[in-house]
Length: 180
Image 1 (cartoon, rainbow, N blue to C red):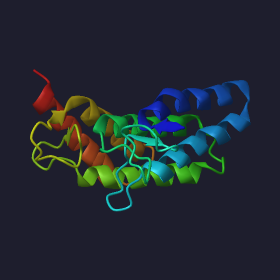
Image 2 (tube, helix red, strand yellow):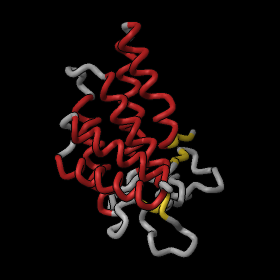
Image 3 (cartoon, rainbow, N blue to C red):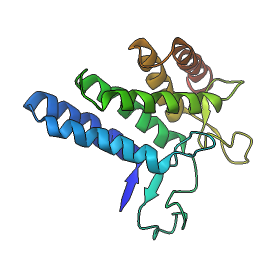
Image 4 (cartoon, helix red, strand yellow):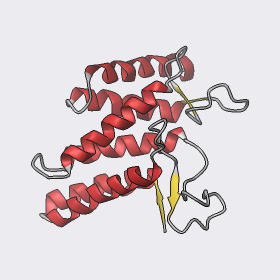
């Protein structure tokens, strides 16, 4: 009864490659469906950010009893999801009917995460929308993942150039903040 953002990275690009290599076109449909369902159930309508997990049964301790969503916008989970999208698009046929929807999801996610990019450092916090919260910190993994997804997405034309620039800013911030 559960879906997790990071789980999409773990399975979707592999399944899409499998579908391409072994001629299993129905698997492409499943890959697209997983990304679409995850965004449908995890996306916050106000911020565009994605909650880490969703429990259809709404029975998990962490699940909101009304929405089934987990309580926070965990950066690493969104980073895995963003990377999964751009890696899956590498494998998905150009004429697949679900391709435009995956690109649209990537664009919505890029817009949302760039809005919460730390203005000073260019990187992201562990909980991306709570930069000033005590105990929340600038986080290396999410910053690297968003940097990768934004730059690759822009390079391949899925995203506008400004998102690639935000990814480059994150990369530069990553070097300043985390590399010694």
